[in-house]
Image (cartoon, rainbow, N blue to C red; front, side, top):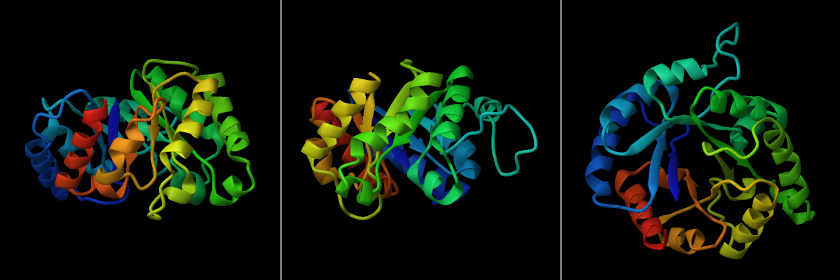
Length: 239
């Protein structure tokens, strides 16, 4: 089971250093799960330094498919490797919504990251209007198709199901809804599956206890070290 904290555009390098020190103290003896944090680019190095030897991985929030080139604002797998980052998120719904990410570019980013020997958390999920129109499975199948084609089942690939209507809204898919979506995804590609969307310490245990839910990609609840540690502890009980 993997619990990954996506900090989004929060925490400067100095704040990341303080947070990671606190997390090492707060996390205690949580066992049976893998833990990762995903800072902004500028805070990666400090997070990696502070968490060295802790067993907590550090992922980037995005990575480009080219090793270098005229791609202003992007970073490459080689840059992440030199920093000793463990991997990267790709295809988060905010990247799709605000920055023009497509199903094909998500797959290209995932493939490049896997090819570089890094780990990938590839995100998929439907809009509220798509769920209301009973299009959830069609959307997930469309988003997954290029990932299956370009990467396929791989030991370093994880898929995160994040219903867009539950991200940062306070809404959370019910355990049954999460399980239904995860079971559908597993029927397409059998890799570890994370749930994301307003995951908190008080709902983590029930969500993580579903048969096809193998962890969580956590947003807001990952920004406070004690809260994130509590969520990890809740997940470890059902791991």
